[in-house]
Length: 402
Image (cartoon, rainbow, N blue to C red; front, top):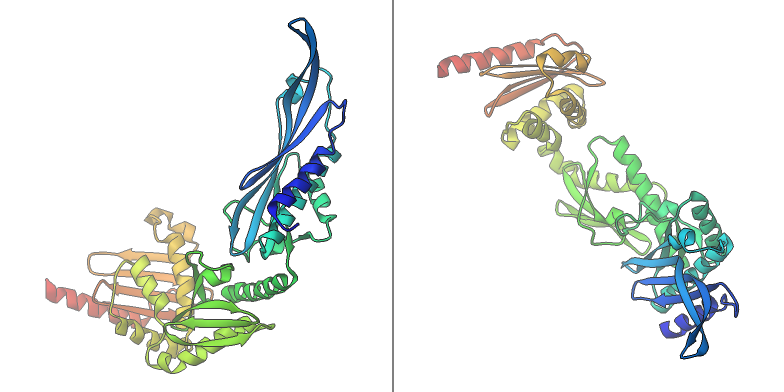
């Protein structure tokens, strides 16, 4: 089909072919900008006299409607949702108990699939994604089976997390250009690797941005090793760019996710020796203990503790400490048993003290709000000498104030 007009005429003829001269059902199709509907109506013929002349009167009652709505076109991808609506007339205005077989309903769905496939081709789109909203489930299952009989339609549920799509639309089936499908598979592999690394690397994080690009991974801001960066797709390359790093490219291949992190880490190595990452320790103080300190103090504390447990390990530990704070910081004193020894707190007008048990350490945290704080990793929940000395310093400072 070269034009939508030709395509509509073809589908219209297919639908009309189901009409029989003396049939009890009438089939028609209507085309809107976004919605295409096939209406099946119950036909009732009566003979009435009009001015003494007998005339045939044809009454049509809505029976079943099968529709396919274009939810949206985003980044060259069309998203179409199929539905079936059964009129109450099927029960209340159907004295002859006429039934419509599932085979007939599915044949109408095939006509709609053919229309939207043709629409994709005429509009030169990358892909057509299909989903259905049917009840009971057997109709949904049959719809999938009918759709998959089309050699151009395949199951693409795995792409649901990769592609930017309309809200409340779950990708189930699709018709894709081969080149575009290959590109999505590459992006899927990259996204799977990044998701694994987000679980594996505590200090590797991401946040969602406004959807401006076709793939979800491109609409995220990542953080690792003191740098925020974005990932873009370009033909067969991955482009990594950010304000704190120089843009670099890597080819798609297995392990490219780890290569991205290695590339960022290498670029930030010298800077991080002078200014270690402080994102998580700063988050701990600002958003959990609700106090702030200058960046150079955070850097100093990171250096002191990294000297005890290993470079970069303090920031990793802070991720776990924050999780524990979020779970237990609002407990009342009489509820502390629920923390199961992972969290305890003591506060007064002069200082705040916390003991937090991570997987590896007991972290003793003493805070003189707005002035200084101390952290110490220990293998025991007993107050370490380091914290005792710091507490003495806080008390002495506050005595001078008074």
